[in-house]
Length: 209
Image 1 (cartoon, helix red, strand yellow):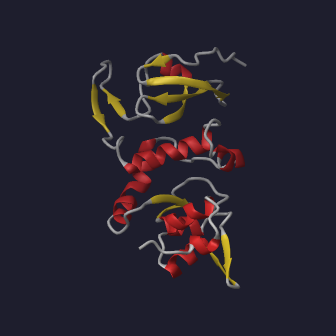
Image 2 (cartoon, helix red, strand yellow):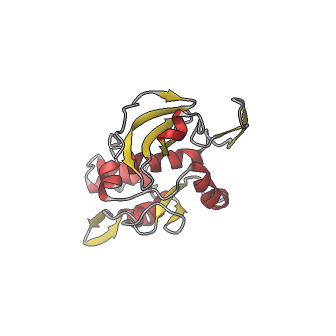
Image 3 (spheres, rainbow, N blue to C red):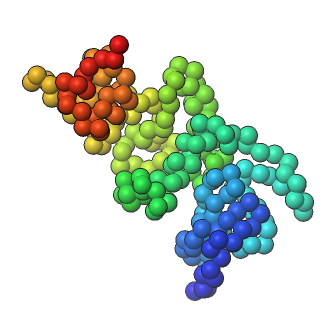
């Protein structure tokens, strides 16, 4: 088996080598790379160090030339930020959320931002027209990030779908935190913040005028 020569920290085009990942079935070394645009991706080392691949895919190059001919144009959008968060949660062990995602075996099945865009961008734009807050939500909390298992959701829907959903009991009535927010007319994110700050329940449930 070929030895994984350490290229950690070295930059090739727009890609910086983060760490060795594994040897694939074709005996090629696979590494984690981070692109200048922020995307983290696993790529065959040979293609990167030979200059065949110079970015995560956000730049397309003319054969034999270094000038970019196209970009996806989404690097500063909320949509792109969602994809980066998925990558961080699934593969970055330094992320505070890794233990609840990659650490539980949750994987990102999109092999590139372009695949994610092709599967999810149209529905994202449609959902965005009627919702001010938008985030990606896994239908099955034990499933991977994939087209089949993901949907766009507002904060309320996402909170309801949490595997550790918060139940609050007040005057003998028990409801989930989002249900209490809806009943009381309090923003669900506001109520969630109050809960995690350990406010007394009477104070939590007071509306701000």
